[in-house]
Image (cartoon, rainbow, N blue to C red; front, side, top):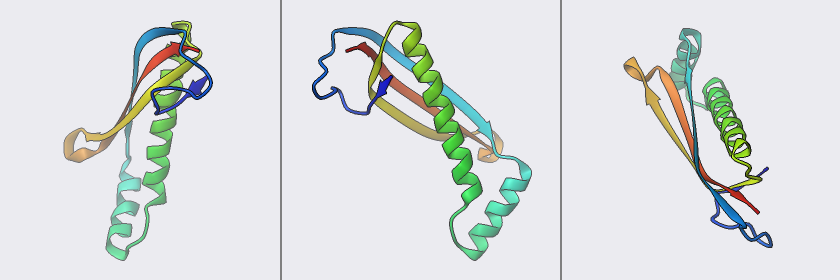
Length: 105
């Protein structure tokens, strides 16, 4: 499955558009992650814990997006857009929404 943020794939013209596909993932950041991230805020530096949570959420959303496209008979997704938001009380959860156009090239 070819997945790209561009609206075309060089050398592979779109033969058929299969429609828009969307996937969302919501992952909660637990209490201990919040404590360690808070310490990072105080002393400075990157929060590897939160970076891993964001990467996990992104990968999960992309895998679901790919499966939805394949179920429509697509072999590529073009125009992919990723949106990241915090949701829940006090922004305790991370939501990743992946959207793209499923196509056959």
